[in-house]
Image (cartoon, rainbow over all chains, first blue to last red; front, side, top):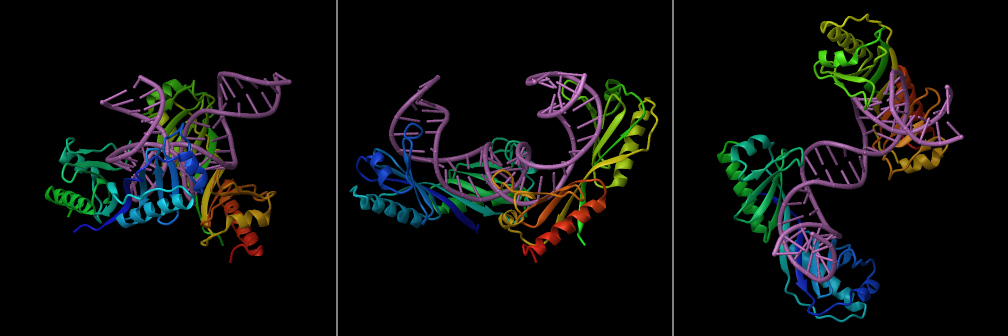
Length: 182
Length: 182
DNA sequence: GGTGTATTTATAAAGGTATTTAAAAAGCTT
DNA sequence: AAGCTTTTTAAATACCTTTATAAATACACC
């Protein structure tokens, strides 16, 4: 069973109404809003350490959370901060996780050149002078795993934590079956 | 007494005669010569791992050696390789060390901000956002020491190994006298 | 012509940057 | 419609920053 650590959760929701981002920029301390650069307003919380993007449409994107619970806490705090500033909104708790980034460790060195040759270019991409990690794309779960020579891995694209565990276990099994790890 | 490790020795000498760098480029395997880019020819040895620059004038610069002996060995090998290629030269053993780069370690963390403030801008330069090391210039020996927050140091500009030891001891003594290290 | 800059090589230190992957949002440009 | 903009995050590489030093060229500047 793979050990893994969630490093980042990206989730979206909606506040159910149009937002005056210019007013919110003035009301929220530290808010960054440069519409000519990007249409979303960026608002950061120290705890949970997150960055939330607010859009004119009322749609919200929360990034940087370390757990699904933290996403809920962060969005709740952002909504409260907006209301405290006198801008009343209706909190819609319908939060959709869009991406989970997690790290894991095979706890042994892996020869990526051998992996790339053995598994073939159809399954993996490995261009060490461009990036030190081997890119491993899975169809089920539909995630992308970056595998490093140290045995450390990064899994991204997961929608739920079990996706990460299944992906890591699947790759470990495939490497073992091919004699590429013990 | 400071422990130190010589990381790089730069030395120069002369082969005593004009060199046809174009002919040498063809004769020496791996030689790089791009006169429009740099007037010297670059010739690398695997052992001792060095890069030697050969000039039309017969002047030679050897870089990368880890000891003074390695410089002699390297220049001797380069001369032999040139002669093996049928280009006869007279080896002039007058090798002059131009620079010794060495590393050392105070084996304790140093607060560089405090060092910079205490010793003053006349003696040291410290611009952490430009470079993480503090630049410490000594007049005797005339060397420059880069001091890092980890306590690790780099000494460059030395002509002989004792310069490095004296520099490191001098700085350690000054830091101790100022209460900046134990 | 004489000072300056730059070019190249090696080397350590420890910060910074970049590289790659996924995902949503909304607005702009092709 | 596709691609860029922004935000976050891990992994491990390369490369940048700084210092000294010789060599011989090409530049610029006065």
